[in-house]
Image (cartoon, rainbow, N blue to C red; front, top):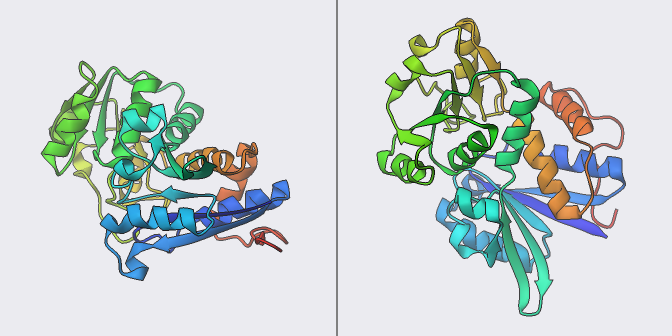
Length: 292
């Protein structure tokens, strides 16, 4: 059996997901192809994502990953969603399966567990009393869910769209409120889930002067792995967490949803480190092809 999967999003030309998925498939002896469906490259708006998902289901894809800015746009166009995806309000993985009425598209969210796992591994002893969340989009929704799961006591949500921040805060009454960057002055930690800092969106989402050595700073961006925010945080003496662990964790969970096979997370983390460092793949890695 072969697997054809893909990633739908904007500006994803430098994504490491194809190599990460295909390399793990090679290690497991699977025939596996991972394609990029870059909206910028094919000249389509984000609103076309639901149509692309349906087309992929008819073209024989096993499933799709969905990334910025489409994670919330596809929600209302699927046959069903997982309990977690429904609560988060965003989908980053879609699986296709044959049912009585034809092909069914089911949405999942592996972002939240990818982040929670990476955070638990790398930041097991930090304070979670007061945390600031930057961004209330699809990634922000998943990270808010993860932070609640991790035991955050109070979450301040900041977004350029105050309405969107308010809608996310309403999902977590008693835990989350909408705030401004000044909330960082009393925060134990901050997580950036906005696109600011990623390839094509350079910059830093907050004033670096608000960072203090006693804070921890996490960024879900992994292209580049060292964002301007993380560099500023390290310069300020903060403990930091980059987006690598999250992207590998969500990829491993998505891989299992696509194939039913249990990937080796530690091996995928090693593969990611090599890919992020620009080292060449080992012989045969990333060469899985349908029918090959």
